[in-house]
Length: 70
Image (cartoon, rainbow, N blue to C red; front, top):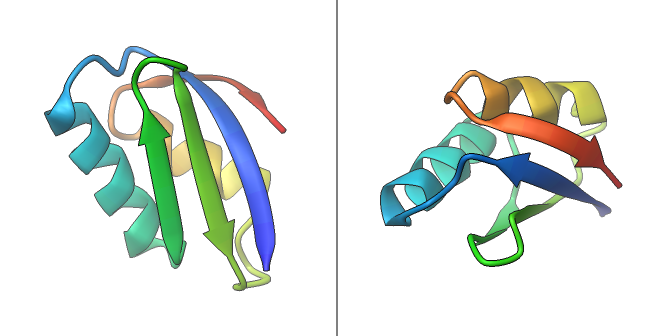
């Protein structure tokens, strides 16, 4: 299982959490943990087609700014 943590700007409420979670689940991410306070999104997945770029693109398509992927 791969695990990535993304630093995301612009998330402020539960709607933001739900939008990001849904977008990542739609591309095959199995576990998503969004922290508004820390401005992070933790994604766990086993699909080898998912890359840091696909994670970033899915979040940015929702209108948020991904600053870093770890």
